[in-house]
Length: 433
Image 1 (cartoon, helix red, strand yellow):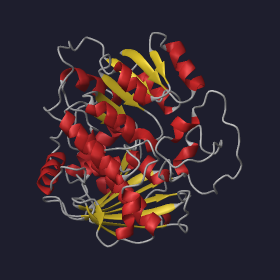
Image 2 (spheres, helix red, strand yellow):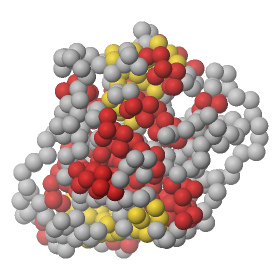
Image 3 (cartoon, helix red, strand yellow):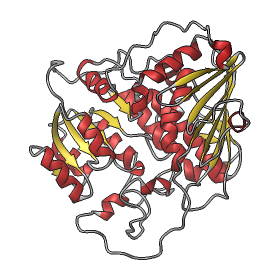
Image 4 (cartoon, one colour):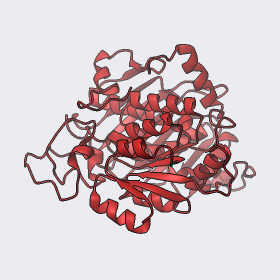
Protein backbone atom coordinates (compact mmCIF):
# COMPACT_ATOMS: atom_id res chain seq x y z
CA UNK A 1 0.00 0.00 0.00
CA UNK A 2 1.17 3.59 -0.51
CA UNK A 3 3.01 5.09 2.44
CA UNK A 4 0.73 6.46 5.13
CA UNK A 5 -2.16 4.11 4.36
CA UNK A 6 -3.55 1.97 7.14
CA UNK A 7 -5.60 -1.19 7.27
CA UNK A 8 -8.52 0.78 8.74
CA UNK A 9 -8.41 3.31 5.88
CA UNK A 10 -8.30 0.53 3.31
CA UNK A 11 -11.24 -1.35 4.82
CA UNK A 12 -13.29 1.81 4.99
CA UNK A 13 -12.53 2.61 1.35
CA UNK A 14 -13.38 -0.95 0.30
CA UNK A 15 -16.72 -0.69 2.09
CA UNK A 16 -17.49 2.55 0.28
CA UNK A 17 -16.61 0.99 -3.06
CA UNK A 18 -18.85 -1.99 -2.36
CA UNK A 19 -21.73 0.32 -1.49
CA UNK A 20 -21.21 2.34 -4.64
CA UNK A 21 -20.65 5.51 -2.61
CA UNK A 22 -17.04 6.42 -3.19
CA UNK A 23 -17.70 8.93 -5.95
CA UNK A 24 -21.26 9.98 -5.22
CA UNK A 25 -21.61 13.34 -3.56
CA UNK A 26 -17.90 13.69 -2.86
CA UNK A 27 -16.60 15.21 -6.08
CA UNK A 28 -15.37 18.76 -6.21
CA UNK A 29 -16.59 20.47 -9.39
CA UNK A 30 -14.34 23.03 -11.02
CA UNK A 31 -14.30 26.15 -8.88
CA UNK A 32 -16.92 28.79 -9.72
CA UNK A 33 -17.87 26.97 -12.91
CA UNK A 34 -21.24 27.14 -14.59
CA UNK A 35 -22.45 23.75 -15.88
CA UNK A 36 -22.69 25.42 -19.30
CA UNK A 37 -19.10 26.61 -19.27
CA UNK A 38 -16.62 24.51 -21.21
CA UNK A 39 -13.81 22.58 -19.56
CA UNK A 40 -10.18 23.22 -20.41
CA UNK A 41 -8.87 19.75 -21.22
CA UNK A 42 -5.32 18.46 -21.69
CA UNK A 43 -4.99 15.49 -24.04
CA UNK A 44 -2.15 13.12 -23.13
CA UNK A 45 -1.77 10.59 -25.92
CA UNK A 46 -3.30 12.06 -29.06
CA UNK A 47 -3.11 9.21 -31.58
CA UNK A 48 -4.89 5.87 -31.90
CA UNK A 49 -7.22 5.39 -28.93
CA UNK A 50 -6.30 8.91 -27.85
CA UNK A 51 -7.65 10.36 -31.11
CA UNK A 52 -10.99 8.63 -30.48
CA UNK A 53 -11.13 9.91 -26.91
CA UNK A 54 -10.24 13.41 -28.06
CA UNK A 55 -13.09 13.31 -30.54
CA UNK A 56 -15.47 12.33 -27.75
CA UNK A 57 -14.57 15.38 -25.63
CA UNK A 58 -14.00 17.81 -28.50
CA UNK A 59 -17.07 19.84 -27.54
CA UNK A 60 -15.01 21.22 -24.64
CA UNK A 61 -11.89 23.38 -24.91
CA UNK A 62 -8.87 21.32 -25.95
CA UNK A 63 -6.12 23.57 -24.63
CA UNK A 64 -3.12 21.21 -24.61
CA UNK A 65 -2.04 18.23 -26.68
CA UNK A 66 0.76 15.81 -25.82
CA UNK A 67 2.14 12.88 -27.77
CA UNK A 68 5.60 11.36 -28.11
CA UNK A 69 5.00 10.97 -31.87
CA UNK A 70 5.23 14.36 -33.55
CA UNK A 71 3.36 13.10 -36.62
CA UNK A 72 0.34 12.10 -34.54
CA UNK A 73 0.68 15.25 -32.50
CA UNK A 74 0.63 17.32 -35.67
CA UNK A 75 -2.57 15.67 -36.91
CA UNK A 76 -4.26 16.40 -33.61
CA UNK A 77 -3.03 20.00 -33.70
CA UNK A 78 -4.59 20.50 -37.12
CA UNK A 79 -7.99 19.81 -35.54
CA UNK A 80 -7.25 21.89 -32.45
CA UNK A 81 -4.96 24.70 -33.63
CA UNK A 82 -5.39 26.78 -30.46
CA UNK A 83 -3.99 24.05 -28.23
CA UNK A 84 -0.39 24.16 -27.04
CA UNK A 85 1.60 21.07 -28.01
CA UNK A 86 4.03 18.98 -25.97
CA UNK A 87 5.93 15.71 -26.34
CA UNK A 88 6.47 15.26 -22.57
CA UNK A 89 3.41 15.29 -20.28
CA UNK A 90 5.59 16.29 -17.33
CA UNK A 91 6.39 19.56 -19.07
CA UNK A 92 2.72 20.03 -19.91
CA UNK A 93 1.71 19.81 -16.25
CA UNK A 94 4.59 22.04 -15.18
CA UNK A 95 3.70 24.80 -17.62
CA UNK A 96 -0.09 24.57 -17.87
CA UNK A 97 -1.36 23.38 -14.49
CA UNK A 98 -3.11 26.74 -13.96
CA UNK A 99 -4.80 26.66 -17.37
CA UNK A 100 -6.29 23.16 -17.35
CA UNK A 101 -9.26 21.72 -15.47
CA UNK A 102 -8.90 18.11 -16.54
CA UNK A 103 -6.86 15.55 -18.45
CA UNK A 104 -7.63 12.66 -20.78
CA UNK A 105 -4.89 10.02 -20.54
CA UNK A 106 -4.58 7.63 -23.49
CA UNK A 107 -0.90 6.73 -23.40
CA UNK A 108 0.50 3.20 -23.37
CA UNK A 109 -0.44 1.14 -20.31
CA UNK A 110 2.98 1.40 -18.66
CA UNK A 111 2.78 5.20 -18.42
CA UNK A 112 -0.89 5.54 -17.39
CA UNK A 113 -0.12 5.84 -13.70
CA UNK A 114 2.53 8.53 -14.15
CA UNK A 115 0.35 10.88 -16.18
CA UNK A 116 -2.76 10.17 -14.10
CA UNK A 117 -1.08 10.66 -10.72
CA UNK A 118 0.42 13.96 -11.86
CA UNK A 119 -3.05 15.21 -12.78
CA UNK A 120 -4.69 13.98 -9.57
CA UNK A 121 -2.07 15.62 -7.38
CA UNK A 122 -2.79 18.91 -9.10
CA UNK A 123 -6.49 18.45 -8.33
CA UNK A 124 -7.45 17.86 -11.98
CA UNK A 125 -10.29 15.65 -13.14
CA UNK A 126 -9.04 12.60 -15.05
CA UNK A 127 -10.34 10.27 -17.73
CA UNK A 128 -7.88 7.37 -18.19
CA UNK A 129 -8.02 4.62 -20.75
CA UNK A 130 -8.25 1.03 -19.62
CA UNK A 131 -6.62 -0.79 -18.02
CA UNK A 132 -6.08 1.87 -15.40
CA UNK A 133 -2.46 0.94 -14.60
CA UNK A 134 0.33 -1.48 -15.43
CA UNK A 135 0.84 -3.03 -11.97
CA UNK A 136 -1.27 -3.87 -8.94
CA UNK A 137 0.63 -1.38 -6.76
CA UNK A 138 0.24 1.43 -9.31
CA UNK A 139 -3.49 0.77 -9.43
CA UNK A 140 -3.83 1.07 -5.66
CA UNK A 141 -1.79 4.30 -5.67
CA UNK A 142 -4.10 5.82 -8.30
CA UNK A 143 -7.27 4.60 -6.61
CA UNK A 144 -6.27 6.14 -3.30
CA UNK A 145 -5.00 9.36 -4.90
CA UNK A 146 -8.35 9.80 -6.67
CA UNK A 147 -10.25 9.33 -3.41
CA UNK A 148 -8.04 11.93 -1.74
CA UNK A 149 -8.33 14.42 -4.62
CA UNK A 150 -12.15 14.15 -4.73
CA UNK A 151 -12.23 14.92 -8.44
CA UNK A 152 -14.22 13.35 -11.27
CA UNK A 153 -12.59 10.20 -12.64
CA UNK A 154 -13.58 7.67 -15.28
CA UNK A 155 -11.77 4.65 -16.73
CA UNK A 156 -12.30 4.00 -20.42
CA UNK A 157 -14.68 1.03 -20.17
CA UNK A 158 -16.93 2.55 -22.81
CA UNK A 159 -19.29 -0.44 -23.10
CA UNK A 160 -20.34 0.13 -19.48
CA UNK A 161 -22.55 2.96 -20.79
CA UNK A 162 -24.53 0.63 -23.07
CA UNK A 163 -28.14 -0.37 -22.38
CA UNK A 164 -27.45 -4.09 -22.81
CA UNK A 165 -25.15 -4.30 -19.80
CA UNK A 166 -27.75 -2.47 -17.71
CA UNK A 167 -30.48 -4.95 -18.55
CA UNK A 168 -28.22 -7.91 -17.72
CA UNK A 169 -27.24 -6.38 -14.36
CA UNK A 170 -30.93 -5.89 -13.54
CA UNK A 171 -31.75 -9.51 -14.40
CA UNK A 172 -28.92 -10.92 -12.32
CA UNK A 173 -29.64 -8.70 -9.34
CA UNK A 174 -33.39 -9.38 -9.54
CA UNK A 175 -32.65 -13.09 -9.09
CA UNK A 176 -33.91 -14.13 -12.53
CA UNK A 177 -31.61 -17.17 -12.55
CA UNK A 178 -31.26 -17.54 -8.79
CA UNK A 179 -28.00 -17.26 -6.85
CA UNK A 180 -25.00 -17.15 -9.21
CA UNK A 181 -22.13 -19.39 -8.18
CA UNK A 182 -20.08 -19.38 -11.38
CA UNK A 183 -19.48 -17.07 -14.30
CA UNK A 184 -17.51 -17.58 -17.52
CA UNK A 185 -16.09 -14.86 -19.79
CA UNK A 186 -14.41 -15.53 -23.13
CA UNK A 187 -13.10 -13.52 -26.09
CA UNK A 188 -11.82 -14.67 -29.44
CA UNK A 189 -9.04 -12.11 -29.78
CA UNK A 190 -5.51 -12.47 -28.48
CA UNK A 191 -2.36 -10.41 -28.25
CA UNK A 192 0.53 -12.63 -27.25
CA UNK A 193 3.52 -14.74 -28.16
CA UNK A 194 6.68 -13.94 -30.06
CA UNK A 195 10.32 -13.28 -29.26
CA UNK A 196 12.09 -10.04 -28.48
CA UNK A 197 13.50 -8.44 -31.65
CA UNK A 198 17.28 -8.42 -31.93
CA UNK A 199 17.69 -5.84 -34.70
CA UNK A 200 18.69 -2.28 -33.90
CA UNK A 201 16.70 -0.08 -36.25
CA UNK A 202 16.74 3.71 -36.59
CA UNK A 203 14.03 5.53 -34.66
CA UNK A 204 11.47 7.05 -37.05
CA UNK A 205 11.72 10.79 -37.48
CA UNK A 206 9.60 12.62 -34.94
CA UNK A 207 9.22 9.70 -32.52
CA UNK A 208 10.66 10.50 -29.10
CA UNK A 209 11.66 6.95 -28.24
CA UNK A 210 13.12 7.75 -24.84
CA UNK A 211 9.82 9.32 -23.76
CA UNK A 212 7.83 6.40 -25.20
CA UNK A 213 9.93 3.96 -23.15
CA UNK A 214 9.35 6.16 -20.10
CA UNK A 215 9.70 4.18 -16.86
CA UNK A 216 10.33 0.83 -18.59
CA UNK A 217 13.76 -0.71 -19.03
CA UNK A 218 15.69 0.68 -21.98
CA UNK A 219 15.58 -1.25 -25.24
CA UNK A 220 16.19 -0.30 -28.87
CA UNK A 221 13.30 0.92 -30.99
CA UNK A 222 11.53 -1.67 -33.11
CA UNK A 223 8.22 -1.56 -35.03
CA UNK A 224 7.15 -4.63 -33.02
CA UNK A 225 6.40 -2.25 -30.14
CA UNK A 226 4.85 0.83 -31.68
CA UNK A 227 2.36 2.03 -32.81
CA UNK A 228 -0.31 0.28 -30.73
CA UNK A 229 -1.83 -2.12 -30.14
CA UNK A 230 1.44 -4.03 -30.72
CA UNK A 231 2.79 -3.10 -27.28
CA UNK A 232 -0.08 -4.86 -25.44
CA UNK A 233 1.64 -8.24 -25.47
CA UNK A 234 5.02 -7.14 -24.06
CA UNK A 235 5.27 -7.44 -20.26
CA UNK A 236 7.34 -4.26 -20.04
CA UNK A 237 4.53 -2.21 -21.61
CA UNK A 238 1.26 -4.14 -21.15
CA UNK A 239 -0.25 -7.30 -19.70
CA UNK A 240 -1.79 -9.01 -22.71
CA UNK A 241 -5.34 -9.73 -23.76
CA UNK A 242 -6.91 -10.45 -20.39
CA UNK A 243 -5.71 -7.24 -18.75
CA UNK A 244 -6.86 -5.15 -21.71
CA UNK A 245 -10.15 -6.72 -22.83
CA UNK A 246 -10.87 -8.01 -19.35
CA UNK A 247 -11.48 -4.42 -18.30
CA UNK A 248 -14.46 -4.47 -20.70
CA UNK A 249 -15.75 -8.03 -20.39
CA UNK A 250 -15.17 -8.68 -16.70
CA UNK A 251 -16.77 -5.33 -15.99
CA UNK A 252 -20.20 -6.97 -16.52
CA UNK A 253 -19.92 -9.69 -13.82
CA UNK A 254 -18.01 -7.25 -11.61
CA UNK A 255 -21.01 -4.92 -11.73
CA UNK A 256 -23.80 -7.50 -11.70
CA UNK A 257 -22.33 -9.68 -8.93
CA UNK A 258 -20.98 -6.79 -6.82
CA UNK A 259 -17.47 -8.25 -6.81
CA UNK A 260 -14.49 -6.84 -4.99
CA UNK A 261 -11.13 -8.43 -4.14
CA UNK A 262 -10.60 -12.17 -4.89
CA UNK A 263 -9.54 -14.77 -2.34
CA UNK A 264 -7.26 -16.45 -4.84
CA UNK A 265 -6.45 -16.72 -8.53
CA UNK A 266 -4.93 -19.45 -10.69
CA UNK A 267 -4.22 -19.73 -14.40
CA UNK A 268 -3.25 -22.12 -17.15
CA UNK A 269 -1.71 -21.41 -20.52
CA UNK A 270 1.50 -21.90 -22.48
CA UNK A 271 4.74 -21.96 -20.50
CA UNK A 272 5.20 -18.37 -19.26
CA UNK A 273 7.53 -16.35 -21.45
CA UNK A 274 9.82 -13.72 -19.88
CA UNK A 275 8.98 -11.12 -22.55
CA UNK A 276 5.45 -11.67 -23.86
CA UNK A 277 1.94 -12.46 -22.68
CA UNK A 278 0.37 -15.77 -23.77
CA UNK A 279 -1.60 -16.21 -27.01
CA UNK A 280 -4.18 -18.19 -25.00
CA UNK A 281 -5.09 -18.20 -21.34
CA UNK A 282 -7.59 -19.61 -18.86
CA UNK A 283 -7.73 -17.81 -15.53
CA UNK A 284 -9.90 -18.47 -12.47
CA UNK A 285 -10.70 -16.30 -9.46
CA UNK A 286 -12.61 -17.24 -6.32
CA UNK A 287 -14.60 -14.41 -4.70
CA UNK A 288 -16.04 -14.61 -1.19
CA UNK A 289 -19.69 -14.17 -0.21
CA UNK A 290 -20.88 -10.55 -0.42
CA UNK A 291 -23.75 -10.02 2.00
CA UNK A 292 -26.54 -12.36 0.88
CA UNK A 293 -24.66 -13.26 -2.33
CA UNK A 294 -22.87 -16.63 -2.31
CA UNK A 295 -19.19 -17.18 -3.14
CA UNK A 296 -18.62 -17.21 -6.89
CA UNK A 297 -16.00 -18.64 -9.25
CA UNK A 298 -15.14 -16.45 -12.25
CA UNK A 299 -13.24 -17.95 -15.21
CA UNK A 300 -11.67 -16.10 -18.15
CA UNK A 301 -10.74 -17.64 -21.54
CA UNK A 302 -9.07 -16.22 -24.64
CA UNK A 303 -7.20 -17.37 -27.72
CA UNK A 304 -9.83 -19.92 -28.80
CA UNK A 305 -10.55 -21.39 -25.37
CA UNK A 306 -14.16 -21.56 -24.16
CA UNK A 307 -16.07 -23.04 -21.19
CA UNK A 308 -17.27 -26.64 -21.30
CA UNK A 309 -20.88 -25.43 -21.11
CA UNK A 310 -20.32 -23.90 -24.55
CA UNK A 311 -18.16 -26.58 -26.18
CA UNK A 312 -20.56 -29.31 -24.99
CA UNK A 313 -23.57 -27.51 -26.46
CA UNK A 314 -25.28 -26.55 -23.19
CA UNK A 315 -25.04 -22.85 -24.07
CA UNK A 316 -24.88 -21.08 -27.46
CA UNK A 317 -21.43 -20.93 -29.02
CA UNK A 318 -21.00 -17.18 -29.37
CA UNK A 319 -17.63 -15.84 -30.48
CA UNK A 320 -17.35 -13.73 -27.34
CA UNK A 321 -19.53 -13.97 -24.27
CA UNK A 322 -20.24 -13.67 -20.60
CA UNK A 323 -22.21 -16.59 -19.12
CA UNK A 324 -23.78 -16.32 -15.66
CA UNK A 325 -24.66 -19.72 -14.19
CA UNK A 326 -27.35 -19.57 -11.51
CA UNK A 327 -29.26 -22.16 -9.50
CA UNK A 328 -32.33 -21.71 -11.75
CA UNK A 329 -30.84 -20.99 -15.16
CA UNK A 330 -28.24 -19.03 -17.09
CA UNK A 331 -27.81 -15.64 -18.77
CA UNK A 332 -25.54 -15.30 -21.80
CA UNK A 333 -24.50 -11.84 -22.91
CA UNK A 334 -22.12 -10.05 -25.22
CA UNK A 335 -21.77 -6.30 -25.80
CA UNK A 336 -25.04 -5.86 -27.67
CA UNK A 337 -27.44 -8.70 -26.77
CA UNK A 338 -28.31 -11.25 -24.10
CA UNK A 339 -30.52 -14.31 -23.63
CA UNK A 340 -32.00 -16.22 -20.69
CA UNK A 341 -31.33 -19.97 -20.82
CA UNK A 342 -32.92 -22.44 -21.31
CA UNK A 343 -34.99 -20.17 -23.56
CA UNK A 344 -38.13 -22.36 -23.37
CA UNK A 345 -38.22 -22.19 -19.60
CA UNK A 346 -37.96 -18.38 -19.65
CA UNK A 347 -40.43 -17.82 -22.50
CA UNK A 348 -43.04 -16.37 -20.12
CA UNK A 349 -40.61 -14.73 -17.71
CA UNK A 350 -41.62 -11.18 -16.78
CA UNK A 351 -38.52 -9.05 -16.79
CA UNK A 352 -37.95 -6.48 -14.05
CA UNK A 353 -38.72 -2.90 -14.99
CA UNK A 354 -35.56 -1.00 -15.96
CA UNK A 355 -34.07 0.53 -12.83
CA UNK A 356 -30.57 1.60 -13.88
CA UNK A 357 -30.83 5.03 -15.55
CA UNK A 358 -29.76 5.39 -19.15
CA UNK A 359 -26.24 6.71 -19.49
CA UNK A 360 -25.55 10.17 -20.85
CA UNK A 361 -22.70 8.52 -22.72
CA UNK A 362 -19.44 7.30 -21.24
CA UNK A 363 -17.41 10.45 -21.91
CA UNK A 364 -20.40 12.72 -21.27
CA UNK A 365 -20.83 11.25 -17.78
CA UNK A 366 -17.30 12.30 -16.96
CA UNK A 367 -17.69 15.79 -18.38
CA UNK A 368 -20.90 16.32 -16.40
CA UNK A 369 -19.18 15.04 -13.26
CA UNK A 370 -16.33 17.51 -13.77
CA UNK A 371 -18.80 20.38 -13.98
CA UNK A 372 -21.41 19.39 -11.42
CA UNK A 373 -19.93 16.85 -9.03
CA UNK A 374 -22.33 14.11 -10.14
CA UNK A 375 -20.87 10.58 -9.90
CA UNK A 376 -19.55 8.62 -12.86
CA UNK A 377 -20.17 4.89 -13.26
CA UNK A 378 -16.57 3.77 -13.85
CA UNK A 379 -14.83 6.08 -11.38
CA UNK A 380 -11.48 4.87 -10.08
CA UNK A 381 -13.05 3.66 -6.83
CA UNK A 382 -14.99 1.12 -8.93
CA UNK A 383 -12.54 0.41 -11.73
CA UNK A 384 -9.38 0.31 -9.60
CA UNK A 385 -10.34 -2.89 -7.73
CA UNK A 386 -11.49 -4.44 -11.03
CA UNK A 387 -8.09 -3.82 -12.60
CA UNK A 388 -6.31 -5.05 -9.46
CA UNK A 389 -8.25 -8.32 -9.58
CA UNK A 390 -7.45 -8.84 -13.26
CA UNK A 391 -3.78 -8.26 -12.54
CA UNK A 392 -3.83 -10.84 -9.74
CA UNK A 393 -4.86 -13.28 -12.48
CA UNK A 394 -1.91 -12.14 -14.63
CA UNK A 395 0.32 -12.61 -11.58
CA UNK A 396 -0.87 -16.20 -11.13
CA UNK A 397 -0.10 -17.00 -14.77
CA UNK A 398 3.35 -15.40 -14.79
CA UNK A 399 4.41 -17.21 -11.60
CA UNK A 400 2.79 -20.51 -12.56
CA UNK A 401 0.94 -21.06 -9.28
CA UNK A 402 -2.25 -20.26 -7.41
CA UNK A 403 -2.02 -16.89 -5.68
CA UNK A 404 -3.59 -16.62 -2.23
CA UNK A 405 -4.35 -12.91 -2.21
CA UNK A 406 -4.09 -10.39 0.62
CA UNK A 407 -5.73 -7.19 -0.70
CA UNK A 408 -5.07 -5.14 2.41
CA UNK A 409 -1.29 -5.45 2.15
CA UNK A 410 -1.12 -6.15 -1.60
CA UNK A 411 0.69 -9.42 -1.00
CA UNK A 412 0.61 -12.92 -2.43
CA UNK A 413 0.47 -14.70 0.91
CA UNK A 414 2.03 -17.90 -0.42
CA UNK A 415 4.44 -16.42 -2.94
CA UNK A 416 6.98 -13.77 -1.85
CA UNK A 417 8.59 -13.76 -5.29
CA UNK A 418 5.43 -12.05 -6.58
CA UNK A 419 6.69 -8.73 -5.19
CA UNK A 420 8.85 -8.06 -8.27
CA UNK A 421 5.70 -8.04 -10.43
CA UNK A 422 3.33 -6.39 -7.96
CA UNK A 423 5.73 -3.48 -7.51
CA UNK A 424 8.21 -3.29 -10.38
CA UNK A 425 11.41 -1.27 -10.62
CA UNK A 426 11.42 1.88 -12.77
CA UNK A 427 14.10 3.25 -15.03
CA UNK A 428 16.35 5.90 -13.55
CA UNK A 429 14.67 9.29 -13.62
CA UNK A 430 11.17 7.89 -13.18
CA UNK A 431 9.43 7.42 -9.85
CA UNK A 432 5.86 7.00 -8.66
CA UNK A 433 5.93 8.07 -5.03
